[in-house]
Length: 148
Image (tube, rainbow, N blue to C red; front, side):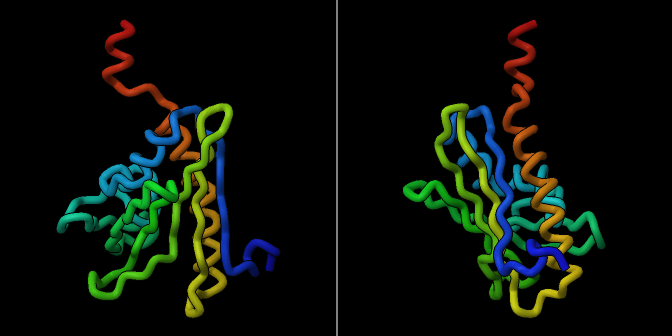
């Protein structure tokens, strides 16, 4: 087992060439989450602040409640299969950087998570941080049209 797989916390981060406020809004957007979270794709709003997505791995559905804390530049993702029993195991943090901002994804391993499930989560976060960077740094369609 690798050192990362043994750790109870995993962090994936990249510099994104966008303003921190824009990145933080994006990370807190439950519908945008469905564009980059491999375990919760194609999110739909099911209640105020609560979204349902689909896992690319097994097709199962998962609920996600992103909770934004603008003072801490942080989003806590409360996740689970039952809206009454969500847990905050995933967090995003956005930090200012000379080239824009640093976006960090952090995950905490639950005591009942198997080694295989934890390794998959680590691999997902490593891919997801690249998806986030790409989405944030790709000019919006309206900006592309205006430049033509």
